[in-house]
Image 1 (cartoon, helix red, strand yellow):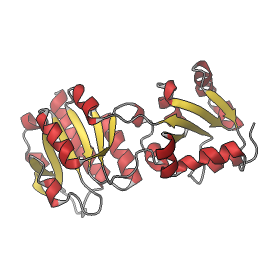
Image 2 (cartoon, one colour):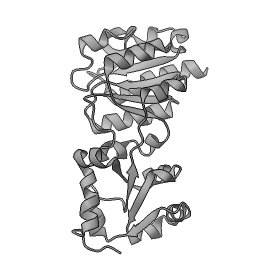
Image 3 (spheres, one colour):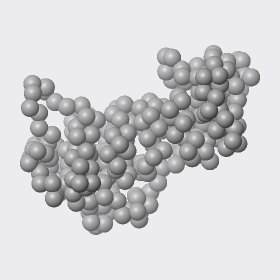
Image 4 (cartoon, helix red, strand yellow):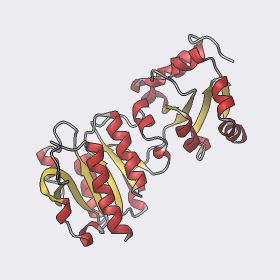
Length: 264
C-alpha cells in the first residue's frame, strides 16, 4: 500500500491532471466506479489502477474484473488517492489509461449516419455531457474541433460517465477541412443556431438522412464563417419563458430528433 501522498509514484501520476503531461505521455486519468466499469470493457487501455481499501471492499466485482484482465492494481491511502483526484470528494479509485481518439478518416470508413461536431466548446461539463448524449442517441462519433476543451481533461472524462468508451471521437479537428470531408462523404450538416428555422418544422425525412449536427461555443455560438459551412441552420424552439437552453440540453434535443427519425 502507498500511504504517503507525496510518494514519487503518486506525484508522477498526479501530473496527468495537467494537459501538458497528458500531451507528453499520451495518458489520462479516469476517476470513479462507473468510468472504471466501462473502461474494463476495453482493459488493454488501462495502464494501472489506484484504489483505496474501502473501494476494494465496496466494489469487489470491479476489482475482480481488473485482476482477471491482469491490470496492475495498487492499494493507496485516502490521502494518496486524493492527491490523484481533482474532486473535493474522491470516489475511491483512479485509473491511468491510454488515450484512444481516432482520426476523421477512421470515422468516415465506418459510414456514419449521425455525428455530433463540437466547434470550440470550452466548458468541460458541456463537452462530456454532449458526448454522453450522443452515445445515448446512438450517434456514430463525436468530433471536437481545434480550440475545444481537452477531451481528456478529468472533468470532461468524469462527465461522460464512461460513454467515452462507447463511441469513437476525434480531437483537434480543423473545422473547415472536416466539414468538407463529411459533406463529401454524403452527410448533411445541420447547425444549431438561434437564427435558424425551428427544429419543429424540419421534415422527418430530412432528419432521417445521414447527418452531422454542428454545435458552437457556449458563449458566442457559431462564428458566422463556421455557420456558413452548414447546409441548414436550425434552432430549438423555446415555448416557455426561458431565455435560452444550455448547450448540452439543446444538443441532446437535436441529436434525439435525428435518432428518432433514423430509427423509426
